[in-house]
Length: 149
Image (tube, rainbow, N blue to C red):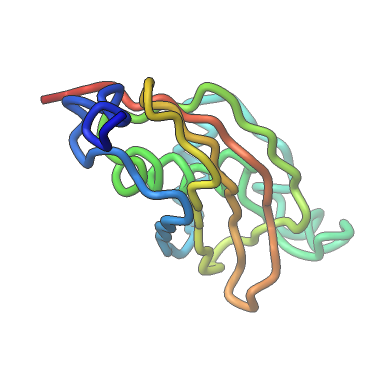
């Protein structure tokens, strides 16, 4: 079987078939506006996101962004970078290790662990770290990439 035949399942995918071990990262700094936008979308008005005095008394010791704000950077990594445009999650398994506060810089990272050649499906290791390099979220994801060409 030729290489071309092996990756036929990726025909029409914008960035093509990714290599195992390929990595993509994105960096951004969280803002209070992120909390407001996420609340508008979801209705999540947990006081640990809005009441600074209360949040300081929690084990977090600060206002924290919603988990969906933290993990949203992973959506951007897979949809824009690796595997790229047309990619959606089929499954995620995420472990939240450390809360992210407002004004913290986070880095989302995705790494291709395996990929099918007959279908545009990948298994990824995913993580979000804070500015100190501490793991905030880690886990795995399975993605499907639609041909857009």
